[in-house]
Every structure is written in structure tokens, then in C-alpha cells.
Amino acid sequence: MIYRSLGRTELKVSEIGYGAWGIGKSSWVGAKDDESIRALHTAIDYGLNFIDTALVYGDGHSEALVGQVVKERSETIYIASKIPPKNMKWPAPSGIPVEEAFSAEHIIASTERSLKNLGLETIDLQQFHVWSDEWVNQGDWLLAIEKLKQQGKIRYFGVSINDHQPDNAIKLVESGLVDSVQVIYNIFDQSPEDHLFPICERHNVGVIVRVPLDEGGLTGRITVDTAFEEGDFRNRYFKGDRKQEVADRIEKIAADLDISNDQMAETSLRFILSHPAVSTVIPGMRSLRNVERNCQISDGQGLSKEQLEKLKSHRWVRNYYLA
Image 1 (cartoon, one colour):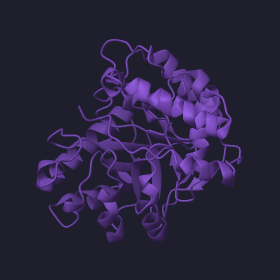
Image 2 (cartoon, helix red, strand yellow; image 1 turned 90 degrees about the horizontal axis):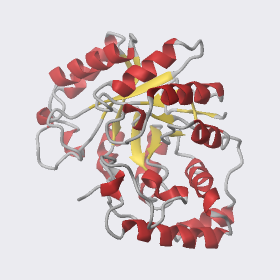
Image 3 (cartoon, one colour; image 1 turned 120 degrees about the vertical axis):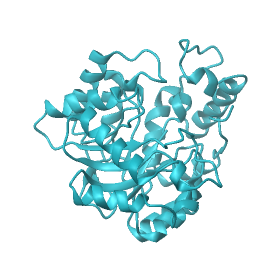
Image 4 (cartoon, helix red, strand yellow; image 1 turned 90 degrees about the vertical axis):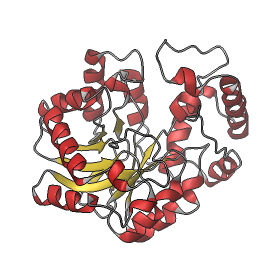
């Protein structure tokens, strides 16, 4: 496993991290706790040391599983969690005051709940689960973050940027108030390269990449006949003609790079790790098979310049999270 600096923090994180949304069993159907725990342990066995969870993932269930595993290990494991907006609105709407989403009282109370769920005294990276750059100079959120740092309850602060809105944290990065940003970045949505990544590099802010496989779209396994279990959010994400749209795009990428569909997930992760601004990528890994495949990608073997150049033409920014 290769390790990278999380921006200006003291954390050296595994470039393959663990996205723990799926094990919370709130939106992804089919997760089993015993398998999730085995997957976490196996990932750590491979050298993974960065786990990203959130208070709302199964109403604390994901945090509880993560905490259980961390307490059973002797290795140093860095935990990142996220505070949900008080108004529970994703993404953050424009034009609302920050107090509706992140008041100091809400930030502190949510952090206390996460610490209890995790069974830990400190969260290495506490993040806001949404963000709007309108909030940079508003409210008392920064006082709460500083208080939590002083109390030793959190070490660093970051934000998870609204879906497909990478430019909506540029002011925050430039302000110097944030240690990391979490953003959607993959072969389809390459837009963070335009403005966000250069500014993060300039200000030495860590970059955590989420949705690296487009919720499964970039695994090469989505076809028009793919079916998800009832209650799985991917039924909405890939509704209508979207599965066919994705499958057609994957076919073109595979042909352009002369690879098989089975190589798409590996290629997608290598594409992300090829960018120097990226600190870590956090695919969801509920199965041992995916843990093994993804962790083995951290071998220093990046894509060629020719492959990266070809992938530029496959940029496809759209928002399947919208109804």
C-alpha cells in the first residue's frame, strides 16, 4: 500500500481508503454486518489506514461497525466522519443561512454522537456533509470547529462538496480554514481538474475522492438488464434509459483503451490516483473480493500518458442524483 499526505495535515493516508456508506445499510441494500466487518479487517490487513464514514450512514450503524473494527486492531487507523446538515437537505441549497445547516450547537452535538457511536475519544477528520461557499464568512460554525479541536475531540476539519459542484468550495479552500475537501471525481466527471484541484495544490489542502466508480457505472458491470434489490437507491440513480447510457459509454472507453469491461474498475481507480492533487480515493467495499481487487491497485503502476489523454475525451458531467 502506498501512502500520501492528506494536504498540510500530519496524516499519511493510504491512497486506497474505505468508503463506509454501504455498510451502514441505509441506502445500499444487501450489506451484512459480518461480511462488512471481515471486509474492513481485510482492508486493514492490506495496509489501508483511512476509513470515511458519516453520522447518517444507517443512523450511526456504519460508525459503530467502524469503531468496533478499529478497537480490535493495533494499527493506527485514521477515521473521518461527517456531520449532516441540520435541515437534512442534500445538496446544500443556495441562499440559506449557514445556521439552518451548521450551527455551533448542531456541530458539537453531532460530533458527540459520532464519538459515542465510534467509541473513540477523537475523530481524526470531521467534515460537513454538504457545503456552500456562501457560508465562508457566516455564522458561528468556525468557533465550534476550533472548540472541538481545542478539546481534542477532532484533529482536522474538512467538507464534502455538493454533488458535481467542485467549484462550490473554492472560496473555502482559499480562506485557509479547511484541511481537506471530499469531491466527486472519476472518468466521467473530470471537472475538479479545471479549478478545484489546482487551488487545493496551491493551498496544500487534502483531496478525498468519492464516487470513484460512479455508484457502479464505472465497474463495467452495469447493463440494461442489471437489477437492484427493492429499496436500493441505485434503482433511482440508474432509472429509465440511464443503464443503457452508461453501458454505451463503457463500451466506448473499453474499445478506446483496448481493455475488457472487467478491467474498468481498476482503470477507473488508476485514473484517479494519477492526479497529484488526490490524497486518497474511497471506494465502497462491502465484499472481500472488492477489497482485495481495489487494495492491490496501490502498486505505483499508473496509467500511461497515452491512456490518460484518451480518457479526457470521455468526460461526461451529468447529475444522476437529481430526480
